[in-house]
Length: 390
Ligand code: PLP
Image 1: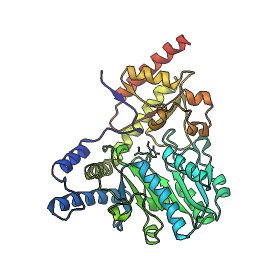
Image 2 (image 1 turned 45 degrees about the horizontal axis):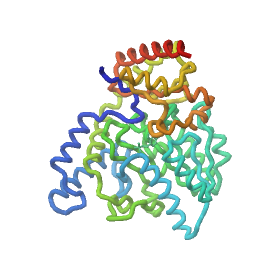
Image 3 (image 1 turned 90 degrees about the horizontal axis):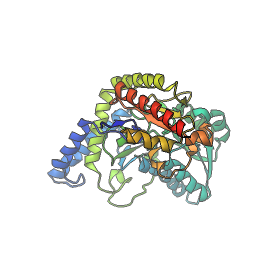
Image 4 (image 1 turned 90 degrees about the vertical axis):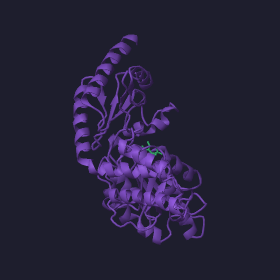
């Protein structure tokens, strides 16, 4: 049975170019990029080549040292952004400053749980509503004041695909909370929509390799030159001082090199990939409309389609689809095993029952209309079969 993979927001299938680069790194450039002999120099060169690719994809022609900080994944980039800013602030202010942190009410757990921990440590966390997939800018305007030290808002929601107006949100924060650091978790938006920290007006931005057709094991945090100059970011990991002292630990050169190759390929193919995904989305929506409720945010990325089934639990449908070789998800893969109703979907405005009967289909340029037709056929058959069993 051929597998139909429609869970590209959970992770993507690595491209041939990225795998080839990874093999080259493992076989030829296996030195430690911190070593000064030739093997180390070769590995270092590969690392810097990847850094240039990532920097270029973020619109940085001449990145300053430390501006692209490689780490292990999007989760680490988000944790570094939040803890790194908060600790730096405390140190600069030489005290146990508490302040306000703004996030959206549908953040990925790597941001939500970090903010929740800081909340239990005495910080005030305000969650900006995203009902219907719309970031409530009036609420943000009210919440933003002088006490805000950090705003961390995602660009694209990983469950609904909602695309938020981060540029406008960042402008509000700059005006109302001039001392605040602005971070954007761009993991789901990167390489799907144009993303540059300058255009978004943010100080920090997180991305992850495995969401863009590279293998798992690498992520990156963009840090603005201003933050670096002002020492407004401090490391979470202490050690050998790699990555400009901000992320100790020997760099995962094979994963980072593959990340760079996937970025380069993604930049070259951006238009064709985007057109393909747009066409696939339109095709899929046509098939799905008669069958299910489509949860369409006001603005969204083409790659994510979120649906609610007619009174069939997601878990039951996931199993039936999986038995037919189809991979979709009930929400984010990281929370799938906890079987908790997704707070993001409740924040979106779905009822508990709707949220419990929802699926996320996430597309890639590698998918085909034939795959989507097969998926829709199986879905329809299963909806009929499961409805008879009720
Ligand atoms: N942020 C968002 C919006 C995500 O969707 C994810 C992963 O699904 C992450 C962060 C975490 O990325 P990683 O899986 O690389 O840790």
